[in-house]
Image (tube, rainbow, N blue to C red; front, top):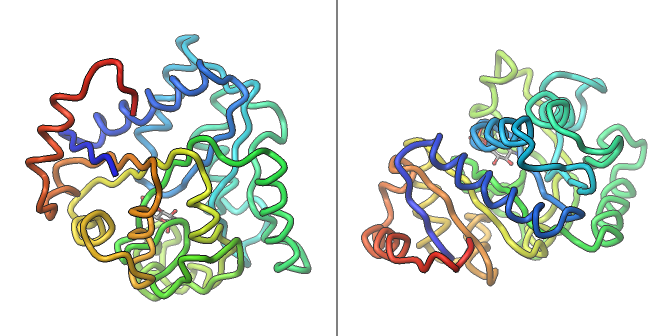
Length: 260
Ligand code: GLP
């Protein structure tokens, strides 16, 4: 895993946005994996600015969300399709219908999960997957205890995650209990995974994900099994990493020809 430690969330957003832009210039029809939450917001703001300056088009690309809440009414502002529409999609030039999410309104949720897996396969898989991390070490909504071989499915949120996400809903009671989420194994099928983490609340989760044992108790630790992962962190999120001096030295001496 490549670990890049930068000064602040703005620098993290700029670097991650550059990786997306470089990919779309190389492969305009690339498949993006998008994440939600507050961690990717500086990235999305940078992508919008770069699109407005004419530096990047999303017009031929497609995108898949990692997860969504079950039980919110369609169009609820905290549903993840509404989030991504507000923060990215409406400001850039994706084709209509190019950004998909698991169908949390389906009568048959397991069938909707299978259909989502099939849609990912039919698209040829995700080229670049953006990821955040929960304070409990989750990726997408794969809570501790999730099988490292899991696929897209219904999942119940932990109390900790519902408490963390209460800030978006006003109270913890308003946070849905169930979600549809890509599984750990689904996420690991993307060609390149870019993990974004900023702020002190992520320090333990990042230490466990990057340097801890690979365990279902910390689903993000499964990223250690993937051949191409870039963790882009700010100083605060990186504060618990034993090998931080090595990561900094490696980044400072990275040859200019070597992309993320
Ligand atoms: C939610 C999402 C995750 C995200 C996490 C972190 O739980 N399902 O994909 O990584 O939040 O959110 P934040 O970036 O707001 O801390």
